[in-house]
Amino acid sequence: MRPSRRLLLLAALALALSVLGLAFGDDAGRVAWAGWGPLVLALAADLALSLRRPLRLEASAPPEMFIGAQAELRLHAARAPAGLSARIDWPDGLRGPEDIAFGADGTAEALITAVRRGRWPIRRLWLMWPSRLGLLEFVPRTALDLTVAAIPDIRPVSSGQIDVAVRSALFGARENFARGEGSEFHQLRDFTAGMDPRAIDWKRSARHGALVARQMRAERNHHVIIALDNGRLMGEYLDGLPKIDHCINAALALTWAAGLGGDQVGLIAYDARPRLFLPPQPGRKAFAVFRSRAAGLDYRSVETNHTLAMATLMARTPRRSLIVVFSDFADTTTAELLVENLAALSRRHVVIFVAMKDPALTRLEVASPASLDDIARAVMAGEMLRERAAVMERLSRLGAAVIDAPPRAITTRLISTWLDLKAREAI
Image (tube, rainbow, N blue to C red; front, side):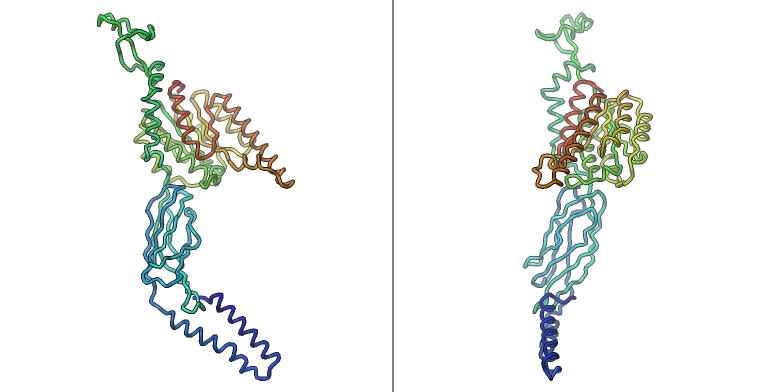
C-alpha cells in the first residue's frame, strides 16, 4: 500500500496552510487541525471502505513458444476492483507490456515475445488498484508458477513451406535436369527419338532385342555438415533476435530439407573451442536430435577460435561433404583468419558461408544527413559495407558459395543454394 498522487497533493496543500498559519496567525493549533484533520479522517474512511479479502489470481501461458514468435498470457482475478492493473517482472528471455490492464470481468490478456532460447520462469507479479476515494494505491505482490520454454523456430517446417519447395525442385521440373545429367543410375527406359544416343545401354539392348537407355539422376546420400559459430559476435541482436538464433532456425530448415533430399546431416557448434559434434545421420532423424541439442546451446561471450574448430571438423570429416558455416565478422582484420580457414576447408569440401547483413548499416549509408555527425556515420557505414563486400568477394573467389542477406531471407537463400549445388553435383 502506498499514497496516491491525490493524497500527496492534498498533504502538500495542508502543509502549505499550516506554514501560512504559523507565519501569520496566532492560533497555530487550530490552523493545523483545519488543514490536517479532515485529511486524516478522509484517509481513515478511505482505508475502511477499501479493505477487502486478498485477490485470487489465476494465470496461464503456453508451456512452449517459438523464439521470435508471440504468445498470449492470460490473467483472471475473481471480484476484481475497479482500475485493477498488473506489472510482471519479465525474465531476460521474454518481453511483454510494462502494465497490463484488467477488464470489467476481471480478465487481462498480454502478448509476450520470446527473444532468447531457454526455459524462462515467471515468478512475480505486482497487482495495483486505487482505493475507493483514490487516496491510496494497493500494490500487493503475488507469486506465480509459470515457465515458458523458448525453442528454435520450426514454423517453415511445420507449415509445409519447405516440403513444397524441396519436393517441387527434386520431383518437379528440375528432376528432369537432375536425372538427365546426374551420375547415379536411376532406371532403364525405352529409347525414343530425341534422346541422347550416348545414353543407350548396348548390352541390355542386345539382350532385350530393343534399344533401351540408361536414365541417370543426381547422386544422393551426401554428407551435409552444419558449422555454427556461437561466439561473442553471434550474440549480437539483429532484427529482434540474437544472430545465433537466426542461424539455428535456418540450420533446422536445411536439416529438414536435406532429409527430404536423401542427404545425411551432421552438426558442429563451437566458440573458443568445439562444444558439440554430431556425426552425419539421416535428415529426418537428425532433425529431431538437432532441434533438441540446439535448443540447449548456451549463449557465449568469448572470441571464436575458427582455426581449432575447422581443424577438428577436417579431422572428423574425411569424406567430401557440403560444409555450411554460419558465422560473421566485425571488420577485415577479424575476417582474415576466418578466410584462411575457409580456404583450407574448401580444398577438400564444398563450402557455403552464411552471414547476416545488418539493415541498419544500409539505412545509415543512404540516409539524408542533417548534421556533420550524420555525415560521419554515413561515411563509416559505407566503409564497413565496402570492407564486408571485399571479404565476401574473396570467399567467392576461393570457391565458396556466399550468402550475405538480411536475417529473414537467409533460410530461403540457403535452401535454394543447397538445391542448386545438389543439382549441379558439386558435392
